[in-house]
Image (tube, rainbow, N blue to C red; front, side):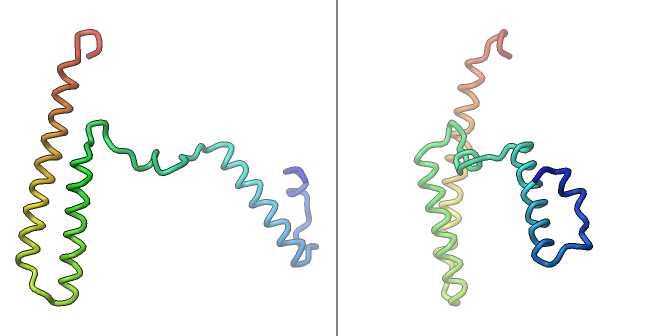
Length: 120
């Protein structure tokens, strides 16, 4: 079926099955047109990329902060004391933030040192 065939059909004369088929055909054409005209990102690596300066240490610190955050929320739901864990979480967050800032700054400094008049 071509696109013009769909536009020339008399919708009023179609039964339920014919109308369903027409709707499926139109949706298929729209879907195909979208796929051909709009590129899509494939895979998680394109949507969740890490900066070049990201290190394993930063990954580990981030995991620790997230785990502590989850533990704190579990304890909060159970009405358990939070003081010690909250302090530990704040300390870990500070360490993570400092490490993140230091690594980012180091990378930017390195980038700036590599610049010359030609590539500025």
